[in-house]
Image 1 (cartoon, rainbow, N blue to C red):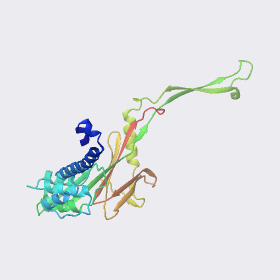
Image 2 (spheres, rainbow, N blue to C red):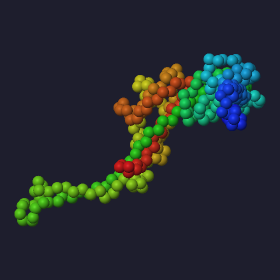
Image 3 (tube, rainbow, N blue to C red):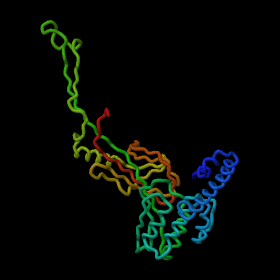
Length: 296
């Protein structure tokens, strides 16, 4: 905000009493302007802070100042989206307000059941008590539901090729020494082909993927929980996919994930930090690809 004294004629700007008066007025004007901006921020859910109590009261939600601003905003937005006829899109958009992930809804009409699926999860899901309450408010009373979390983990197998040629060169004149005496010779090596792109053919990449998929026998969670029942364990073209479920009752907090062969040798390992909020499907993706130049 422009200082008030700069709007006055020059002879006032050189007056100490006027300068002090304008400084005091300017300080109050700046505070008033900031109060105005802060009030305007309360009119939008995404920027509201102390005004969230107004939004919660208007939406019929209990005011809970112990929650973070982000959690309270999510509750309000879910409530606003939940007005009107219940649809799959309404449930999906309500859930999107709570979790930073791609959200979909799987319907099972014959079971009177649906599942809220979170995939491509970008941050740790929060407690779902408020979301559960919101969904219960908007869904038909005869339908049951649960949550499913899908986490993706990627490890890459890279293949490179380099072709070398070697030759033995002797350091003597013919007839002076017996032919083939190695102490007087040295090997010289020449690189014929570097690991440029396009040398590893698809058949080799696909073969490595098939071998890798066949070598994986089980998964291990937190170094103790073994899983042998895979939902998916297959090679598709030049990648391997392994998927399995972990139940919150078995492992509420995941810190490490491993894939093992039949003898128990660790094939892949990932350090993670996942607090389970429900049945969770974990997906390991292992692409097999040609690598670039080893020197660059």
